[in-house]
Image (cartoon, rainbow, N blue to C red):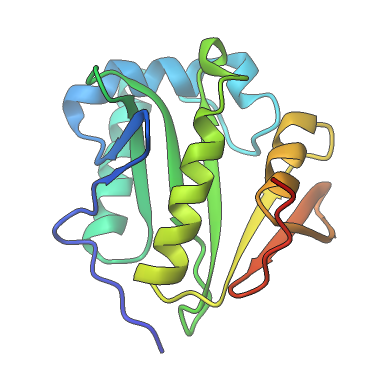
Length: 178
């Protein structure tokens, strides 16, 4: 069984982004992301409507990270400290060899390849640092951009669950087309 240790927090970098821990100073940025209707259109979770709800979310995530149960990053452009999205590895199975990836990004940054960079970095981190054997991604079937992104990054459609599409990437099996 894998054991995770997210302390110190694993700060990651892509070509254009820094993936760092979300702190209370990020409250307004996080609230902007979690209130955005376009961001939340295909995500099965309630939107944070108040500062208190966003604060509770940061507290909950901080506790999950401290307990090595999941990890959530704030996405910032390399030249800024403003959070423009989030990404996570979570929903690990009992033996901690399978986890789920998730991501969200403010609409003004869509279509620029940021999430593709993030997915590649999190897949690398999941397989090579956390020693996962497979990573799943769950997306709404109408979220065509996310479906294309997952397929481009080697994920394979596994089936439907609760109205969502489930994709799987297994370590050592690369179906990348780029």
